[in-house]
Length: 346
Image (cartoon, rainbow, N blue to C red; front, side, top):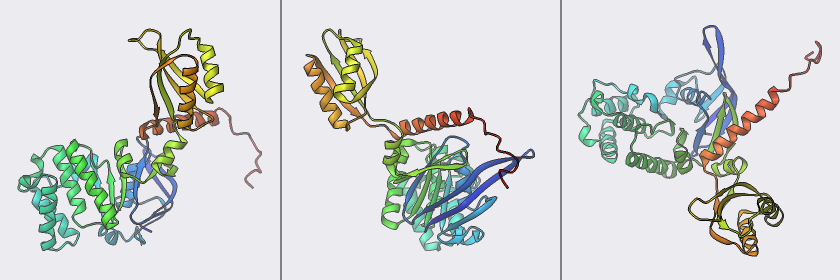
């Protein structure tokens, strides 16, 4: 097992108050998994990454990385690489050059001088930073500092890579290069990667498993596709016209003939007598619903201008899930806990 957490809780004390950042989290991540971590701000994502990076200790619970307990932090630091995007520049020495920074960190990680030189040259060239190797870090742009921080994390060829908003500040080309390199590390070398990001496209392109954390709790653990299936609904978008259009009759026909619900309909501004509608399949698959909808409009002597399925993006699914969770909590909060007597817990 690459990463193991058993009943991990982290409580911060702030002005005498206990703030729970992580609440009894247990999970297993196998070697070679590329796992994305999603959650709103303040959910506990960065706290989790910092615990795995040995920067923080949990208040309670057990953590193992590559079967090494967290208390053996020296051993763990030899097998991990980490990048904290929002503060990646602060993980570098500003008054040292790029090259000197990387050589220093490679030495701390126990990489030989020969390997260090070859890896630094290779990675700097890959990220188009070789011309900046003798430049002081303090003179680099934010995006360049992020790339240097990522190179620093990759120098020891870590077994486990912990990335927290690692791509913040990267331009589009650098992001693609970083993604390609992570995929290669994961596929070719079996590097375990834990990726925390608010970039939903990043999760869709990279992660084969998603962890959703909310208010310190692990509330969902599944594949990105499974997550989209259980949260946001698929739709059919259709642009059409029907003579003698009558909305109540059309809604009834959609329900009875297509086995779906009409969730939205608007007039097309640029075409007289035409409408745009969003249909939510209920009884049949997306493809069968499209076929039934097409037949219905033809039978109504209508004309279809466009018809297309819409599968929800990860962002849509995430927002839908948070909305569902908020509604559930509001329902729970509206029912006060009944008084069960003093002997209830005895």
